Image (cartoon, rainbow, N blue to C red; front, side, top):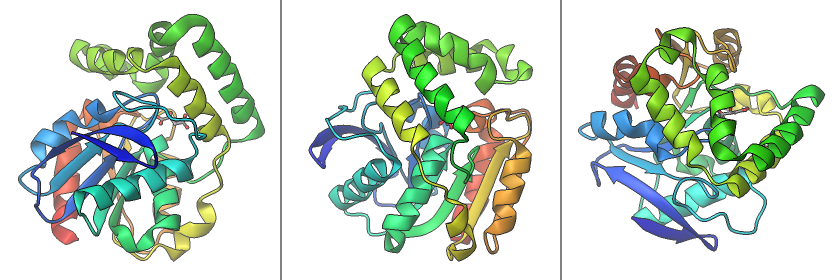
Length: 263
Ligand code: MLT
């Protein structure tokens, strides 16, 4: 379905409509709802699974506002309004995790639980910020297909790179993202705030997930984040890198299922 929130039309995919709890899945960069294909199908008997394409990605419009984490968070709160969902378990991967932190800061009363997958609370370093600008320039020059190809080996460890199904799904998703969305998202990623100060004040059940071979947001970052959040549970997803829900959906869904029963 399509919903118009804050002036832009977002594509939203859902399964298990009306079930409790609602599970809002927030994809990373440069991805879309297809990251969550196995969660949409595998968790629909447990939850109302809601997976939008964020503004600028997939079949959603880009709009004119900067793609800040806060803008995405406000879009998601408006999306929940449209669906009639008061509170949801919010699960974000990587950039989706940064957005999940912004959602918690701005809309805490809408959060039933948090799932932070392959993400980190730290902001970008000066070097990383410069890297975002270089990446935006590169995306403009070479287009999404080459950009995707160049990212694949950083997102996926060798064990996943040798699996044509995983590589094909990741490549198709990344190569189809529009360049203006990629460029706008990189500016938002570059300028995101430090979420470390809010971690000790998180007061909802929280699950931290990380692929054992995640090179971008490694297990050590996930462990530090889980340590800082009161009562958070940390689960390492075996045989997975940065795209753990796609690489090992069985283990990812098992961890989520256990968590959903707890909240
Ligand atoms: C993502 O997967 O969303 C991005 O790699 C996040 C980032 O580059 O910080």
